[in-house]
Amino acid sequence: MPSDLKGLSNCVQCGKIYLRITSAFCPDCLKQDRENLENVRDYLRFNRGASMEETVSDTGVDPGRIVAWIQAGHLMLSPQSAIKYPCENKCGSLIQSGKYCRECLHDLSRSLEVQVPEPRNRGHGFLSKDKF
Ligand SMILES: [Zn+2]
Ligand SMILES: [Zn+2]
Image (cartoon, rainbow, N blue to C red; front, side, top):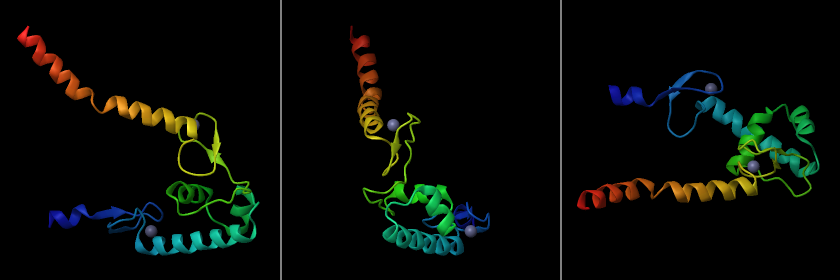
């Protein structure tokens, strides 16, 4: 059945083929990932000032996953946390929540506003040209 094949995907963690529903991970890796998230949460609860290096070496969790959890809002850093990661826009700023720094977020939301109405304006331009 083609519709069944569409749901199959390779797990980004272990490469196993599984039926993809909501996650990029297969059920086994998803379970492991949740456990890792709980471990890191507990660790940071008792080590609020820990750096990324300390967290990674004490929990054994991949730093890329820690950043992904913070970006997705699954993991909240306390204000005194030493964990910082670069803005996705590669502007050089270090941030502690979300994907972009405040400046880039501002610029991105502004450029999105400009892009949305553009195709409609172009269409109107064509019509009025024909009339003239
Ligand atoms: Zn997997
Ligand atoms: Zn930025």
